[in-house]
Image 1 (cartoon, helix red, strand yellow):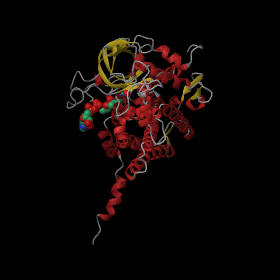
Image 2 (tube, helix red, strand yellow):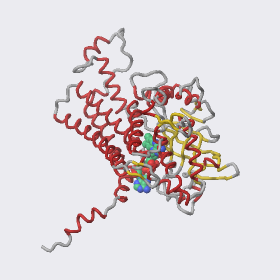
Image 3 (tube, rainbow, N blue to C red):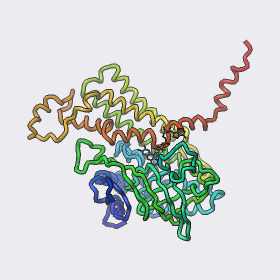
Image 4 (cartoon, protein in one colour):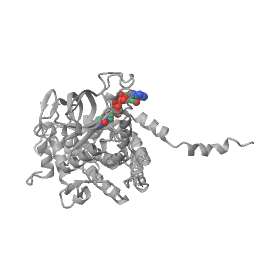
Amino acid sequence: MSLTMSRGQAYIHRLNDDRNVWLDGERVSIPHHPAFQGTLQTIERLFNLADEPETRDTVAFWDEQTAGYVHRAFQLPLSPNDIQRRAGAFRLWADRTHGVMSRLSDYARSRLTGWYATRHDMAIYDPYYADKLAAYYQEAKRKDAFLTIVQRDPQINRSLPVGQDEDAMLRVVKTNAEGIFLRGAKMVATAAPYADDIVVYPVQRIPADRPELAHMVIVPVSSPGLHLVCRESFAAKTPDPSHPLSAHYDEMDAILFFDDVLVPWERVLIHNNPQALWQIRSNAASSSLAYHQSIIRLHAKLEFITAVTSAVANEIGVDSFLNVQEQLGEMISQMQTIEGLIIASEAQAKSDAHGNWLPSFQFIETARNLGSRYYPRAVEILKTIAAGGLIQIPSGNFDRNEPLRPLLDKYLGGTTMQALEKIRLFQLAWDITGSPLGARHDLYERFYAGDPTRNRANQYVQYDKETLKKKVEPWLNIHL
Ligand SMILES: Cc1cc2nc3c(=O)[nH]c(=O)nc-3n(C[C@H](O)[C@H](O)[C@H](O)COP(=O)(O)OP(=O)(O)OC[C@H]3O[C@@H](n4cnc5c(N)ncnc54)[C@H](O)[C@@H]3O)c2cc1C
């Protein structure tokens, strides 16, 4: 990193590479295209927190291996206090972005840290994995890598068994002394256009007779042949105060096309090995550390939407009605349930065989599975309470010379707010509930961790049901 550049500036500077990012049918430059500016400013500010005196020790830790301050998502939790320190870093980033930016790389960095912490367990499946993973973990810390993860193949025909739709699965098409060549596509890669590197592996169980589908790789975003095709941008091309969240927190989603992308051997963590891949999918350290971040972020987001809903209810004078209070109470229960589960996961943390302290995954999983219903429900409550006010926000700017200004002042004020302030509040509420960004977040919370139906079913399938059986058994042999 240059001495004259801040950490955030150095990150933005790195994006001036050959990446193929496509937006609105054109290849675009992330550091220069207006659609990405607001989010880049947000990321830059967050990255810089690791060097600012008031926040440095919350966000970062001194790392002997790289002789520098490194984000706490990379920190191995070697004591219960380390879990709290990691949580503090996640909370600060989440609070600064109201939980709206979810893939700022603290999730992916945590997964990487979990894999690193347990890398030697993989020796029986793959003798090279541990060294490759360790080398990348050190590199990622050293360059403060912005990482994201993508697992799913495109929705072509989900009724076919895994591996039967040739075009649907990312696969190895050639191998040489340099590495492997990948062909196919992956969805949904949140934040990929902003990333340095993407971790790619399939989420499904790969059949033993289809090893060419079983790979885990780390791909630089600038790899030749890799195309990142963005959805529409939610950020306006000029500063737009009427969509405050969209302007600063659009982390972007992309589908990735791999047009015979070369991945060098040192970044091929798993190759042609369905069994090894399944171990990665089931890795407890990685899931526990990554989803610990996710539920802390979720809590910040529920707190924010509750705050906005409460302000709206107060400003239109409906918060004294029993039905409105009941719905606001429901939002507070949601928020506090997630907070309670975070506390429980930390309080019930256990040390694994390697001395890593891991938050209890059972509470994390419950919070994650509840979250896929809680957030859409919170949006529904905000819409129910704000009602027509959400759609009657006047468009445009309202400076003092605006001819309609006296009428706006007269008719758009609230119980305590002047018109301008109340319009800003409702613009915020609309950006959460009705804007394209709002719709995307409703969808994100339902699906970011995979199919919510199968996740909840899986919680039942994995649960130790013997304890439940024992509760019922004594009642089955009673002779009346
Ligand atoms: C905004 C957003 C951002 C995301 N970001 C990321 C990211 O950065 N990285 C990442 O890895 N993932 C990400 N995801 C999650 C991921 O890509 C998928 O959305 C998620 O795994 C669900 O898969 P799918 O969308 O392909 O849905 P599908 O699997 O196609 O499911 C569609 C519907 O069919 C049902 N269905 C499909 N197959 C079955 C089956 N076998 N049995 C029963 N029901 C079935 C599902 O229940 C669902 O209702 C993101 C998702 C969203 C919405």
